[in-house]
Length: 424
Image 1: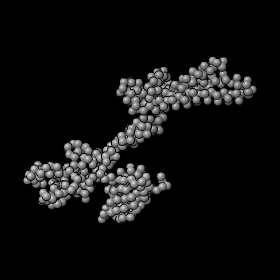
Image 2 (image 1 turned 30 degrees about the vertical axis):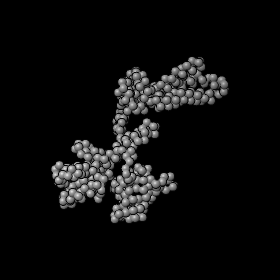
Image 3 (image 1 turned 90 degrees about the vertical axis):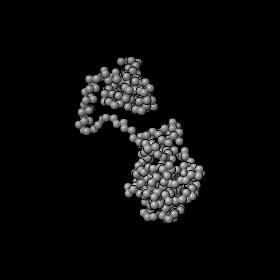
Image 4 (image 1 turned 180 degrees about the vertical axis):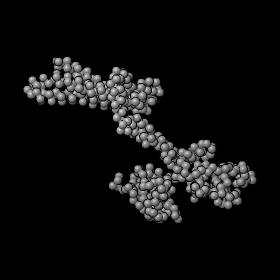
């Protein structure tokens, strides 16, 4: 065989190998979500790719048959065509054979394997939909051989107990990774990324992480005078106030809205907290609910205010629809008093009742130790100190220094968190 004829055959074999090689990687790595979108837009070839990904046995078999057959044939042709010329040039048969092998192999690695696969990695879906029909045709041609090899492989996998079914279950970690990649690529804007992240966080955070705790609840006894009620409503920024019997939060009979009560007073009507026109029934929810479940409860009941009780039927706090939505909106909502204030690049002032999830995010930490045992930064300090904290108590964890600046009786009011220069 002449060198020209051999070169033409090798070129054809390289082209065939490049097509099969790129098809292999493109069909295997094509993203299912992108293919599903393409199928919805009318490209039926995307459905063929999805079906091939679900049942990849025949496809993998025909690819290996084609690649190995082409490689062997190219080696034979290259050896017989190139070796005689190199032997005449070098005068050494063994060295000529080795060099011809290296030349043919290098050409195949570069043009039939490396470049096609790199191209397929960067254009997986377009190449996959273009090559799926030719690959189906090859599978049809080599069906008897494929049946033998594919059946043998399936038998061996079954014998050793290994499943070859492709698992494409989407987890929350996968979605987080996709969001991060989208943000880095500029597809998602920063505030869009935060909104999506906050929505997923609602499923993990319990209602107690954002509630207004019991000690901050402003409520009225049924026997209190209207003058005291008006003074309290003017002084407090709340819209809804609980009403209790015997001045006890364990005997809640409902709540009143300040706007309705004050409007009645201004109209010089005779009003009483127990009037049915003013008193509304309170919604009670357990403290184990997630924020997402609270949002669903508000949606189903039409309420926007709830009382939170624990397993002992004790009132532990209250929550409003605004509190829940503030978690969704995150940094887009500007509060009058920010619970976390960054003083410098490496120091933060943090309110003691700040939810631990917000602290982790603000500090850029991965997690805090055994975070299931506490819900606020105050709880974290108590857990780490193993005592009731007092002013100036401090701990150091993961290059962060936590120091208590102010306390009120047994409560931590404010902490200073400082990041060491070594970790910056």
